[in-house]
Image 1 (tube, rainbow, N blue to C red):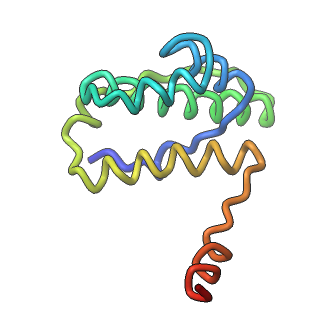
Image 2 (spheres, rainbow, N blue to C red):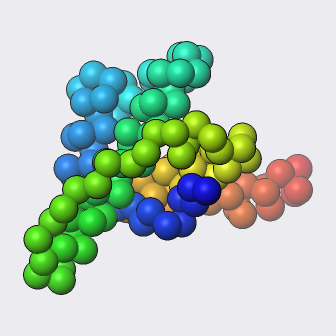
Length: 118
């Protein structure tokens, strides 16, 4: 069974450009396309994004290790056979990786404390 933890990801400039091209010309267009509600298209975009992010990780690792980079193609059926919970984990992992590698900090704790105070 597919496990996202077995596919480390890295959000690089290359990833931003390649993911943006999936739905137009930018990451904003990518996210806009995901929000349109077309399940099949959104699923395919997310699978493509995982593959791009994973290949960016593999590229960086190969350069770091002084090895030849070899891109991989992920098996789409592995994704389509996931449970809804597992699919949600993939969506979360993508968002977290983009935030982490973009230097975006999420202040979830501060917001919770503010809500309790009100």
